[in-house]
Image (cartoon, rainbow, N blue to C red):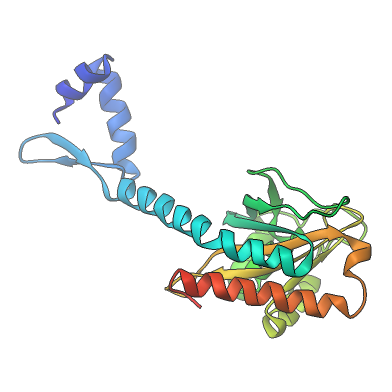
Length: 228
């Protein structure tokens, strides 16, 4: 469409329309065709739409596996996606336990203080981890939250061997989460799955059993979306 047509359709001044289009063009959401001075949809609009579709597929694929994990463990199961240095919870299947963990959709948690978050960090290289530390301090939420990069790296080395990560009361006192990363067809992390519940139900040898169940669930989801 031409600039004039867009301005008329939106019922806003031409100058304002041009400023908006220029901003969108800088970010790749629209393109200007020089030969006839018309505006078209840019590649970033396609990428954004594709990301939504991929996420929708992820939710659909994950639900039955999450339900099975909840039935196997008796704990609440969560699905979260990375966003910057946080994870955002996008889906949950609550356990039937009278005492259980619960996250509202859209809840954010820093990567370093989350089971899913640490599973995601375990896929990062040293340079990327260092950039995270420079951009944001590793905030303490409880007395046992990891706040140094050295300590975090030691934990991540263990996660790379086991395939699952633990948040042992590092975000909330009395709550434990076990998380594992979900990979896409390119081998990149796009999400994570976890179980969460009261710390007393994660004690002792049960931790390893639960961790393997979570890792297996993440692997199943990864394979269903072409990864793994």
